[in-house]
Length: 255
Image 1 (tube, helix red, strand yellow):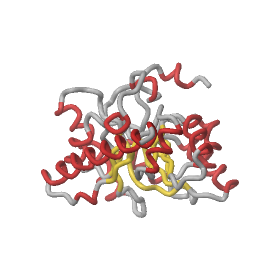
Image 2 (cartoon, rainbow, N blue to C red):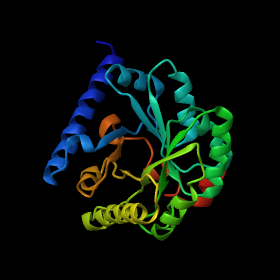
Image 3 (tube, rainbow, N blue to C red):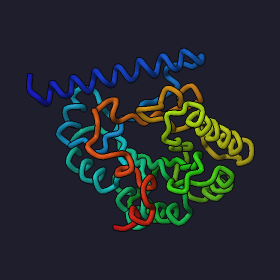
Image 4 (tube, rainbow, N blue to C red):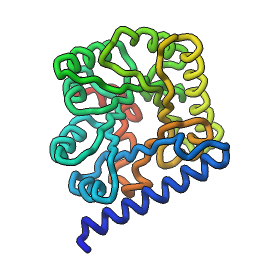
Protein backbone atom coordinates (compact mmCIF):
# COMPACT_ATOMS: atom_id res chain seq x y z
CA UNK A 1 0.00 0.00 0.00
CA UNK A 2 1.45 3.39 -0.97
CA UNK A 3 1.92 6.18 1.56
CA UNK A 4 -0.90 8.17 -0.05
CA UNK A 5 -3.34 5.27 0.00
CA UNK A 6 -2.38 4.54 3.61
CA UNK A 7 -2.98 8.20 4.42
CA UNK A 8 -6.33 8.04 2.69
CA UNK A 9 -7.26 5.02 4.77
CA UNK A 10 -6.28 6.88 7.96
CA UNK A 11 -8.35 9.90 6.93
CA UNK A 12 -11.31 7.63 6.18
CA UNK A 13 -10.94 6.01 9.61
CA UNK A 14 -10.80 9.42 11.28
CA UNK A 15 -13.91 10.56 9.42
CA UNK A 16 -15.69 7.42 10.58
CA UNK A 17 -14.66 8.11 14.18
CA UNK A 18 -15.92 11.70 13.95
CA UNK A 19 -19.22 10.50 12.48
CA UNK A 20 -19.61 8.01 15.33
CA UNK A 21 -19.11 10.85 17.82
CA UNK A 22 -21.63 12.94 15.90
CA UNK A 23 -24.15 10.09 16.02
CA UNK A 24 -23.64 9.70 19.76
CA UNK A 25 -24.19 13.43 20.31
CA UNK A 26 -27.38 13.26 18.24
CA UNK A 27 -28.60 10.28 20.25
CA UNK A 28 -28.05 12.11 23.55
CA UNK A 29 -30.55 14.80 22.54
CA UNK A 30 -32.93 12.68 20.48
CA UNK A 31 -31.88 13.94 17.06
CA UNK A 32 -31.56 11.94 13.86
CA UNK A 33 -27.96 11.37 12.81
CA UNK A 34 -28.90 12.55 9.31
CA UNK A 35 -29.83 15.99 10.66
CA UNK A 36 -26.16 17.00 10.96
CA UNK A 37 -23.67 17.33 8.11
CA UNK A 38 -19.91 17.02 8.49
CA UNK A 39 -17.80 19.59 6.63
CA UNK A 40 -14.15 18.46 6.66
CA UNK A 41 -11.93 21.54 7.07
CA UNK A 42 -8.98 21.10 4.76
CA UNK A 43 -6.95 24.24 5.44
CA UNK A 44 -3.19 23.51 5.25
CA UNK A 45 -3.90 20.02 3.89
CA UNK A 46 -1.88 19.64 0.65
CA UNK A 47 -3.70 18.86 -2.58
CA UNK A 48 -2.06 15.45 -2.85
CA UNK A 49 -3.46 14.46 0.56
CA UNK A 50 -6.89 15.62 -0.54
CA UNK A 51 -6.59 13.47 -3.64
CA UNK A 52 -5.92 10.47 -1.41
CA UNK A 53 -8.79 11.52 0.85
CA UNK A 54 -11.09 11.77 -2.17
CA UNK A 55 -10.19 8.21 -3.13
CA UNK A 56 -11.26 7.27 0.41
CA UNK A 57 -14.61 9.06 0.08
CA UNK A 58 -14.03 12.76 0.79
CA UNK A 59 -16.36 15.00 -1.25
CA UNK A 60 -16.53 18.32 0.64
CA UNK A 61 -13.76 20.73 1.61
CA UNK A 62 -13.87 23.75 3.90
CA UNK A 63 -11.15 26.38 3.52
CA UNK A 64 -10.40 29.56 5.46
CA UNK A 65 -8.12 31.36 3.02
CA UNK A 66 -9.45 32.00 -0.46
CA UNK A 67 -6.07 31.88 -2.18
CA UNK A 68 -5.28 28.46 -0.74
CA UNK A 69 -8.76 27.23 -1.61
CA UNK A 70 -8.53 28.56 -5.14
CA UNK A 71 -5.19 26.86 -5.78
CA UNK A 72 -6.47 23.53 -4.50
CA UNK A 73 -9.70 23.78 -6.48
CA UNK A 74 -7.67 24.30 -9.64
CA UNK A 75 -5.26 21.46 -8.84
CA UNK A 76 -8.14 19.08 -8.09
CA UNK A 77 -10.55 20.24 -10.79
CA UNK A 78 -10.79 16.69 -12.14
CA UNK A 79 -12.40 15.49 -8.90
CA UNK A 80 -16.02 15.90 -7.81
CA UNK A 81 -15.29 18.10 -4.80
CA UNK A 82 -17.42 20.92 -3.45
CA UNK A 83 -15.71 23.92 -1.83
CA UNK A 84 -16.90 26.01 1.09
CA UNK A 85 -15.02 29.18 2.01
CA UNK A 86 -15.48 29.58 5.76
CA UNK A 87 -13.09 32.43 6.62
CA UNK A 88 -13.34 36.22 6.44
CA UNK A 89 -13.18 37.56 2.91
CA UNK A 90 -11.87 40.90 1.71
CA UNK A 91 -14.12 42.56 -0.85
CA UNK A 92 -11.39 42.63 -3.50
CA UNK A 93 -11.22 38.82 -3.38
CA UNK A 94 -14.92 38.27 -3.96
CA UNK A 95 -14.22 37.55 -7.62
CA UNK A 96 -12.29 34.40 -6.73
CA UNK A 97 -15.02 32.99 -4.51
CA UNK A 98 -17.57 33.72 -7.22
CA UNK A 99 -15.60 31.61 -9.68
CA UNK A 100 -15.16 28.35 -7.82
CA UNK A 101 -16.86 28.18 -4.41
CA UNK A 102 -20.11 26.35 -3.80
CA UNK A 103 -20.71 28.03 -0.44
CA UNK A 104 -19.47 31.02 1.55
CA UNK A 105 -20.02 30.90 5.30
CA UNK A 106 -18.70 34.26 6.49
CA UNK A 107 -21.01 36.89 5.00
CA UNK A 108 -21.24 39.87 7.34
CA UNK A 109 -21.47 43.06 5.25
CA UNK A 110 -23.63 44.45 2.48
CA UNK A 111 -20.52 45.75 0.73
CA UNK A 112 -19.26 42.18 0.42
CA UNK A 113 -22.71 40.93 -0.60
CA UNK A 114 -22.80 43.51 -3.38
CA UNK A 115 -19.33 42.53 -4.60
CA UNK A 116 -20.25 38.84 -4.64
CA UNK A 117 -23.53 39.52 -6.44
CA UNK A 118 -21.76 41.50 -9.17
CA UNK A 119 -19.14 38.84 -9.73
CA UNK A 120 -21.65 35.99 -9.66
CA UNK A 121 -23.66 37.77 -12.34
CA UNK A 122 -20.54 37.91 -14.51
CA UNK A 123 -19.77 34.24 -13.86
CA UNK A 124 -23.36 33.13 -14.38
CA UNK A 125 -23.37 31.33 -11.03
CA UNK A 126 -25.18 31.33 -7.71
CA UNK A 127 -23.62 30.90 -4.27
CA UNK A 128 -24.95 29.41 -1.05
CA UNK A 129 -24.25 31.85 1.80
CA UNK A 130 -24.33 31.79 5.57
CA UNK A 131 -24.52 34.93 7.68
CA UNK A 132 -21.66 35.03 10.18
CA UNK A 133 -22.74 36.09 13.66
CA UNK A 134 -20.35 37.05 16.46
CA UNK A 135 -21.91 35.20 19.37
CA UNK A 136 -18.93 35.47 21.72
CA UNK A 137 -18.87 39.27 21.84
CA UNK A 138 -15.12 39.29 21.24
CA UNK A 139 -13.93 42.36 19.32
CA UNK A 140 -11.21 40.27 17.69
CA UNK A 141 -13.76 38.22 15.78
CA UNK A 142 -15.63 39.06 12.62
CA UNK A 143 -19.37 38.64 12.23
CA UNK A 144 -22.50 40.64 12.92
CA UNK A 145 -23.77 41.41 16.38
CA UNK A 146 -26.69 39.08 17.13
CA UNK A 147 -29.04 42.06 17.30
CA UNK A 148 -28.10 43.08 13.73
CA UNK A 149 -28.53 39.70 12.05
CA UNK A 150 -32.27 39.89 11.33
CA UNK A 151 -31.96 43.29 9.68
CA UNK A 152 -29.06 42.03 7.61
CA UNK A 153 -31.03 38.96 6.52
CA UNK A 154 -33.86 41.26 5.45
CA UNK A 155 -31.43 43.40 3.43
CA UNK A 156 -30.18 40.34 1.52
CA UNK A 157 -33.58 39.65 -0.05
CA UNK A 158 -32.85 41.53 -3.33
CA UNK A 159 -29.64 39.60 -4.00
CA UNK A 160 -30.80 36.95 -6.46
CA UNK A 161 -27.46 35.19 -6.84
CA UNK A 162 -26.86 34.81 -3.10
CA UNK A 163 -28.82 31.83 -1.80
CA UNK A 164 -29.18 32.21 1.95
CA UNK A 165 -28.84 28.86 3.69
CA UNK A 166 -28.25 29.65 7.33
CA UNK A 167 -26.04 31.13 10.03
CA UNK A 168 -22.45 30.50 11.08
CA UNK A 169 -20.56 31.29 14.26
CA UNK A 170 -17.22 30.73 15.95
CA UNK A 171 -17.76 30.03 19.63
CA UNK A 172 -15.40 31.44 22.21
CA UNK A 173 -12.15 29.45 22.35
CA UNK A 174 -12.50 28.17 25.90
CA UNK A 175 -12.42 24.95 27.87
CA UNK A 176 -15.46 26.20 29.82
CA UNK A 177 -18.36 24.21 28.46
CA UNK A 178 -21.00 26.68 29.66
CA UNK A 179 -19.33 29.60 27.86
CA UNK A 180 -19.04 27.67 24.60
CA UNK A 181 -22.60 26.38 24.75
CA UNK A 182 -23.87 29.91 25.39
CA UNK A 183 -22.47 30.96 22.00
CA UNK A 184 -24.27 28.13 20.26
CA UNK A 185 -27.53 28.97 22.02
CA UNK A 186 -27.23 32.59 20.92
CA UNK A 187 -26.97 31.51 17.30
CA UNK A 188 -30.05 29.36 17.65
CA UNK A 189 -31.88 32.33 19.19
CA UNK A 190 -30.87 34.47 16.20
CA UNK A 191 -32.21 31.76 13.90
CA UNK A 192 -35.55 31.88 15.69
CA UNK A 193 -35.66 35.67 15.49
CA UNK A 194 -35.03 35.62 11.74
CA UNK A 195 -37.56 32.86 11.14
CA UNK A 196 -40.21 34.78 13.06
CA UNK A 197 -39.43 38.26 11.76
CA UNK A 198 -38.04 37.96 8.23
CA UNK A 199 -40.51 36.27 5.86
CA UNK A 200 -38.81 34.31 3.11
CA UNK A 201 -35.40 34.18 4.79
CA UNK A 202 -33.91 30.68 4.64
CA UNK A 203 -31.85 30.04 7.76
CA UNK A 204 -32.41 26.33 8.26
CA UNK A 205 -28.70 25.59 8.61
CA UNK A 206 -26.67 26.33 11.75
CA UNK A 207 -22.94 26.00 11.05
CA UNK A 208 -21.29 25.81 14.45
CA UNK A 209 -18.81 23.58 16.18
CA UNK A 210 -15.25 22.53 15.34
CA UNK A 211 -12.90 19.73 16.38
CA UNK A 212 -12.85 20.73 20.03
CA UNK A 213 -16.53 21.43 20.56
CA UNK A 214 -18.64 19.92 17.78
CA UNK A 215 -20.43 17.51 20.11
CA UNK A 216 -21.63 20.39 22.29
CA UNK A 217 -22.68 22.22 19.13
CA UNK A 218 -24.75 19.26 17.94
CA UNK A 219 -26.45 19.04 21.33
CA UNK A 220 -27.30 22.75 20.97
CA UNK A 221 -28.79 22.41 17.49
CA UNK A 222 -25.98 22.51 14.91
CA UNK A 223 -26.89 21.16 11.49
CA UNK A 224 -23.34 21.48 10.10
CA UNK A 225 -20.06 21.04 11.96
CA UNK A 226 -16.66 22.11 10.65
CA UNK A 227 -14.02 19.57 11.66
CA UNK A 228 -10.39 19.64 10.59
CA UNK A 229 -7.75 18.45 13.05
CA UNK A 230 -9.79 15.47 14.24
CA UNK A 231 -9.71 14.26 10.62
CA UNK A 232 -6.38 15.42 9.20
CA UNK A 233 -4.24 15.76 12.33
CA UNK A 234 -2.61 18.76 14.05
CA UNK A 235 -1.72 21.89 12.09
CA UNK A 236 1.74 23.46 12.22
CA UNK A 237 0.47 26.86 13.36
CA UNK A 238 -2.15 27.99 15.92
CA UNK A 239 -5.74 28.73 14.90
CA UNK A 240 -5.31 32.50 14.91
CA UNK A 241 -3.10 32.12 11.84
CA UNK A 242 -5.89 30.48 9.87
CA UNK A 243 -8.91 32.33 11.25
CA UNK A 244 -8.72 36.01 10.36
CA UNK A 245 -10.17 37.87 13.29
CA UNK A 246 -8.63 35.77 16.06
CA UNK A 247 -5.50 37.87 15.86
CA UNK A 248 -5.28 41.53 14.92
CA UNK A 249 -7.97 42.55 12.45
CA UNK A 250 -5.75 45.23 11.06
CA UNK A 251 -2.92 42.76 10.47
CA UNK A 252 -5.24 40.24 8.80
CA UNK A 253 -6.79 42.85 6.51
CA UNK A 254 -3.51 43.59 4.76
CA UNK A 255 -3.18 41.92 1.33
